[in-house]
Length: 413
View: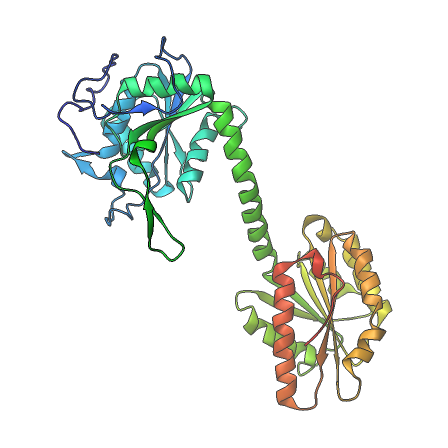
């Protein structure tokens, strides 16, 4: 949008009303949902300005909203334009944590009033939601009154007239949502599947949407909650999985550092290079196991060689179930059985391990995800190393995914 000589914001502290001048920056603007002229000023209106951009599109280090125009940050002009509208009660600016102090300095230096700050999110969507939450009464730290209507506007668009703001707010009160639009100027094309021009759209039938936009607060806040809730859940689930996958305990039935269990531990360290992998030798008292349970390890690799002891496995799982771990996070237990495939075919051994599936179904109810893994305990050192590497990759996937669908699986490396 070009800067026009008749569109300069009013001086600080000055409250103006009335229609835009002939030189307004919005001479052709309309309100997409409004059909009638506004008849009165709204009484409970707030504005949210997402200002978390990094200036990437402009190709400058300084975010566009903080670029100086006539020795003054651009965002200050935008705040000034909104402050002059008396019926906008609160203005929330969402800025990144690193720019929070700079924004406070701008507010103080240029005497801005009615301004509150919220921390911007990683995207414009999340920044707007952060600003909305600052106005929501259901937030514990909220100090502002919930408005009836909220205006969403760009922090870098200072040339907005009160008439346009009033139109979108009035339309939003009637229809729930409204926004300023402009006739299309540029040619808009519709490409074919091969990327070539298919046809040009009729500009007379389309409009360009722009800021400001206005919404009934309850409508937009609920919409953002519904959209963001699932995204946040997925993000939180991913972070939790990542966190609890960093501690792995390898349980072996011997203290021999040359045993296959200890070799597997070393291979796992290379496979999961950022994880902490410890090991303990199984004793009859189960004391070492209890220590690892206390240490809040949520992934256990139980390694046996040439034999599989159901009773010992059951004993370990019982100790695990009695701890608080499964109540906090899904706990992964991988039973690793090492045997020479030339002596015992994997299919034959898997038949003798079918009890793992029944046990897995039982402990899954208590948030323990149990699965089995067969590793070729070959006398050939190279083949053994290859089997350990394949086994480590499978274990890493089980630990990272923590998927209930994988519980009860019998896998072969």
